[in-house]
Length: 70
Image (cartoon, rainbow, N blue to C red):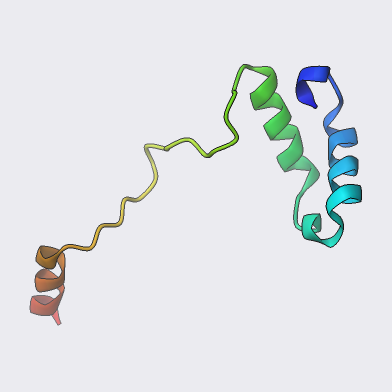
C-alpha cells in the first residue's frame, strides 16, 4: 500500500477493518514508521538484526559457569 502512496492513516484504518480486534494493539505510530521504511526502499517485512540486541546462547559451558556461581 505504501508503494501506491496510500497514507499511513488509511493503511491503519484498512488493517483495523480487515483484522478487527487482532489489530487493537497496532498503533498508528508503528504504521507510520513501517510506511517510512518501505518508502525509503525497504523490501522485507522481517525484523533486521540490530547490533544492540542481546544474543542469548545456552551452552554446557554457560550452564557450568552458572552452577559454579550458585
